[in-house]
Length: 73
Length: 379
Ligand code: SF4
Image 1 (tube, chains in turn red, blue):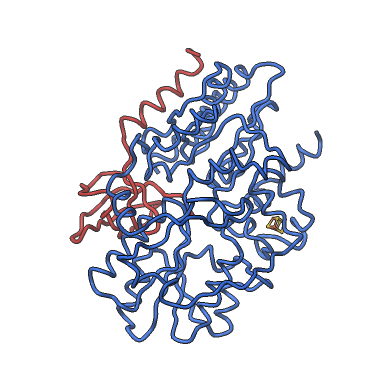
Image 2 (tube, chains in turn brown, purple):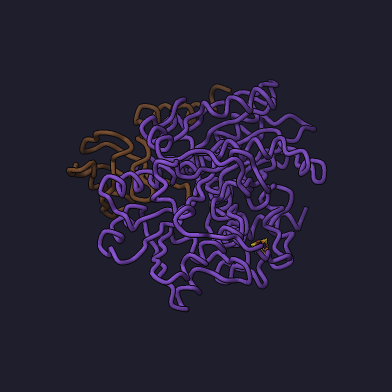
């Protein structure tokens, strides 16, 4: 019930909507809660709405921190 | 899928597990509550507990909206669904939750009630527009993740003048529940559930931000680490909690930086504040009445409030006495402590709400917990 899923914007639609690709399928979602989006943006989608955005640089930083675990405590 | 697969990588999970094992201090125990059912689900699905040293114990919290809805509120929805002229819409999980005398929305539908499953609150508004002769009620439940969508649907109905749409609001607030677990004196006195730190909600925090938890860390001296829902997120957050506890720190840290900021989603919060206001008190299954823990529609949107529109009385609810959900939701019992677990009560034949939703502790134990159960038995 609280589990949003990552989805990539593949088309921006009028009326604060966008077509997204998530887990291999396409879906139209409302972007009213996240403001203007662009093709290629990654959103967190739940019950027909984008609730937030995914930040690529932060994701990379998290993975880099995990990869350095063995070397630095 | 990007942002998913890399956070399920087994090699990284093993490295994290080794790190956690190396850093737990001998003779010390780490009792960590994952508030969210989403985390409970991830912990069981990926066997996270099996990768953790014995000193780290995960306690499952009440963060499953289906599980914490009191039977009485479900009974009210059932009564609403049976009213002539009403179409009751809700998310799929709600259809199989047992109310008093094992009544469910599915059964009401079989008996002729117009109950529809919707994937979005906006679908309910569309249904209302398509059929002006019906009173379409959206039976709304959930934490801060589903509240903004409900608020958006109410706003849309108001903007378009959809007069036959209303909402039966059961939206609840995460920070109020965490606070209750930490301080409810009556509950604490009977069954002390010691908690050393919290795994903070993932997608709830996308909306409300990290800021609301700062108060608990300070006032109760318990660390909170906000964590994503993938297994590596959960494990990294556990490592961060272990490090805080070792160092004697109690701070709010954010593991899920790719999605959560300190302030959350401003537009979503503003929309919720415009449409909803706090209820003085709301009953939670397992926790009892929790002050200022739920939302109802503001007077300006009274026309869309099902509780004002329909005379809805709440007859006393009949709980299944053998169901241990209430104690499980407080972290005071485990699903295997329930004598119905896996016998009469299974995901196909749920007798309590904790067995219905994927996020419920009983469902997670049943689906993925065989190995964990065997380990427990061996201990
Ligand atoms: S196993 Fe079923 S009856 Fe027992 S506590 Fe869980 S949901 Fe309730």
